[in-house]
Amino acid sequence: MKSVMNFLAACCLVLTHAYAGGIVKLHGKITNPISDSISVVYQDSWVGYEPRTVSARLGSDGSFSLSFPQKHDYSVVSIRHGAQGTEIAPLPGDDLLLTLNAANFDSTLHYEGKGAEIANFMAAHMLARSFANFFGSRTQGASGLAPDSFIVRINTSLQKETDFVNNNGAALPESFKKLWLANFQYGVYDAMLNYPVFHEVQKQHSYSISQFDVTDFPVVQTVPGVFDDNLLDLPYYRQYVTKYYNEQLGASERLKGLKPGNNDSAALRLTIANMPPRSAELYEASLIYRHVNTGTYSDLISLLSTFRDRCPNSEYLALLGNKIEAKKKTSAGSPEMDFAINTIDGKTMRLSDLKGKVVFIDFWASWCGPCKGEMPYAKKIEEQFKGKDVVFLYVSLDADPEAWKKMLDEMQVDGIHMRDGSGGWTGPVATEYGIQSVPSFFLIDKQGVYAMDATPRPSQTNELVAAIDKLLK
Image (cartoon, rainbow, N blue to C red):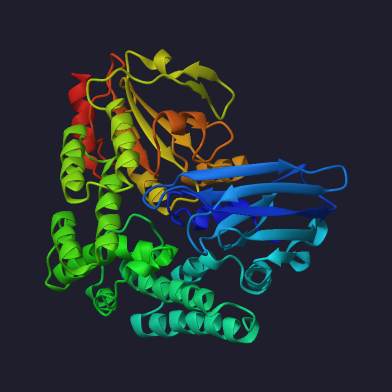
């Protein structure tokens, strides 16, 4: 059995294209159900986490029927039943009959109908290898090894995926096999681009990386620049596209003994010059999307205008425009968006009750490495402002309350702690604040007004302390 929540945490970057047509039908019967419904979750954007859910209640005999849109060939979608889940990669127009015994979830999954060959292959892969995007978790696990051993390990993982296809994929369309294996090849490239960070995380036993070993960075420089717009349906290809030149530039600077600066502009120039048009368009749109949480409203408007001039018909324009307008609600000078606070110790209040104090808000989750990396810095800053009119409010996106509480026990960070509804990206506060990545930070002055467009992270200690000091005067 595989945990749906672990799956969602691992593939928070598994994004698919906006849908414009093509329906997949899924129906069948579940015996020994563990829930009264079944759901399909697909992603609605390549540049942001925009999950969409279609659900159906089970009949008294466990039967169900639902349909969902699927624009692109073989885009991976997840199927959830209770706390369990699996995945399929259908073609538009597929019509699948699913049967399973929920008491033995993975071992009893079976499909018939149009598209059954691929669906049954993925069910077998789930049983033997787990979710396709757990490949990234396995490569991250190898990051503690020295460079040569790391390369051997991740290529061994790739070979296992190749062997699995060769041993189990006789009935698969060649087009699917080609894309399936290409996704894992780009998973290897993605792991190589990530190697310096994850290597130091494991070596230093911390998400707060204080220094890098220059011997980590030749791994990044050996990643080839192999771009193909026909591969944009692949999650790992999209991750590769959105970080390739940034990581190459950063590795070059590190090997020259320089501390990397902001390479976004240089990476964008290289991307436009060297990537095919749709891949370059994805990079630029993703760059703007990443800056929604950290950039100023005026800078975001400028970036969007430049992107619109370059790609006037881009399908990403509407999404980016909406996100930037949502950003305006939390830009400097705007009144705070109020919300209910139900604390971990059972107290109830509202954000507006904290007027008269400076409020630092941190959206985070226990499964988020960078979030945990910020906590030691936050703890020190809290100590610095102890006894002053400053409140540190931590809003968790954890769906599992026990994982949240366990992490708080480990971190021992003071402040006000709350969980956003039942957790997840669609919690009421996360939705109101337009949270699409964690950690995300906001700073509110004593009058209940947002003080900054882009609030420094706790690890940017000097900047954050200076900003809070200014608001206390």
